[in-house]
Image 1 (cartoon, rainbow, N blue to C red):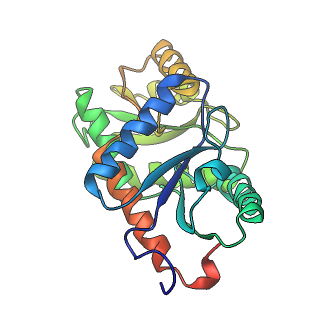
Image 2 (cartoon, rainbow, N blue to C red):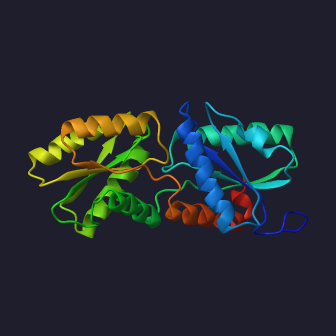
Length: 249
């Protein structure tokens, strides 16, 4: 990159959704601390789309070049509209700034490994044929994003589970509780819940309470700073720098 930052040392600006719940920002900070340990030569900054500071323009201030990565698990409105809009605003203020826009964390095979890690920590053996799994995402008004979750659930069934079904915490059906109820009514010996959520907060709390009330045996923890997410994030970082100039925002 002539005239730019040396490859591998371009600052990484990770953009999370943001939450009023302080546990969410603490989880993002823990994830990025693991990224710094894995790749200490990469400067890492954080930004938020809502509820928290700094916003993206503030995180990009003073940089000549950056890789902007959405800390989002599916591609939907935030990654397609909100983030590009925030980037355009930042470039008006910093016209010489070069920004490489990376892809969302998911879908990615390692995220399924992270889900299985969280289930194992809760005492659920991966691929147990007597266990049905509800894969819970935040949900989106973008049907394309929801179809991605449905596809991830369908592919995960091949691992040996009784079955895997999708549930959505908002904006789509079935709700996580509805998904649990349907599986129990279909004869599933045991139903467990795997939150496809990055951090604790309103959705994670709601999912836990509603699915346990519906009869789920176990609700795993959110993905958080799982090592698989660190690997995915760094893979997205490296890939963003390799994109041709036409794909640089």
